[in-house]
Length: 343
Image 1 (cartoon, rainbow, N blue to C red):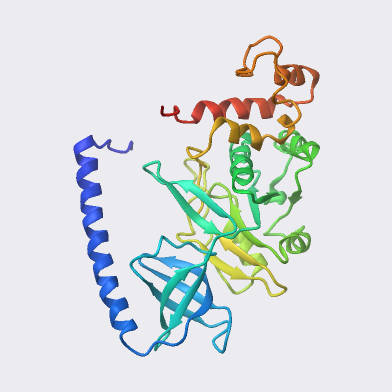
Image 2: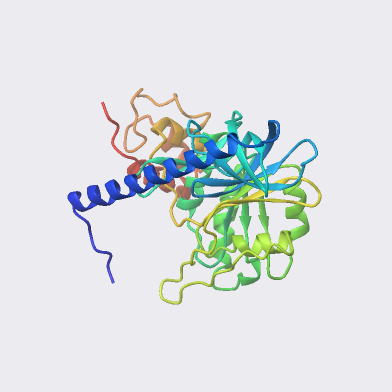
């Protein structure tokens, strides 16, 4: 059944109600914080946000006597929105409750647009973005390339991870090899694993050690299964593919940070089927296609759109085989999806 379309007034009313609820929640939270700060709070110390729940977050103490302990914390009213991976200054209270008093600067942040097109950070201080895909649901180069553009824009190293390698068969092997071959040729790190069978998982652990990593990818590719394999006992929920659509069902509902026994952390983020890039420019997209680097600026026309223009360096490279058609198609598809620039 198709979703009912809301008119402008209905959307405005929904947003107004949600805004009023958020304001009431913020007032209640402010009163709680005032009560806590008026009581017996401990000294300021550093912590790490490991999960977010509405107006509260879970913070793991990272120094002092409380190091490693987890507290459910309230936020001071003047703080920006915090996300999993944020480093903070906080004060502990009684019964596992605390108050966050400051956010420390972020090294990196991974953002995505929400349903209204507003940019929303989903993870902070990430070193490695693990782009997960699988034979089923069928992987698409355009979605992988969107993640690569986002990683380049955020300054986060990418790792391409084909999960469910045990599902490779005679029907999909040729197409998968062609897809993966393009990224191997470009020099992107790429692993093939099976969370179910355990193949390749030790090599994946070595890649993740010492990094703060985040798994991204469309629903159904096995991100939760990978977490369960990498961190036995965590038991994140695993969803099956929809028989009707062949797409995954969402299982993770909030970004959560997990620690590896040998060092490093993993942020498991909610599955998304399409990664919007409304926050990037044409230049950002081109920077995300690393094979374009030595070609940009060498077209005959300064304002070349790399479409049909004579003397286009990118089109010549495409003709010569230095740019793969798969990547050029992705580039054009991503550009076509960007919002019109505002003047």
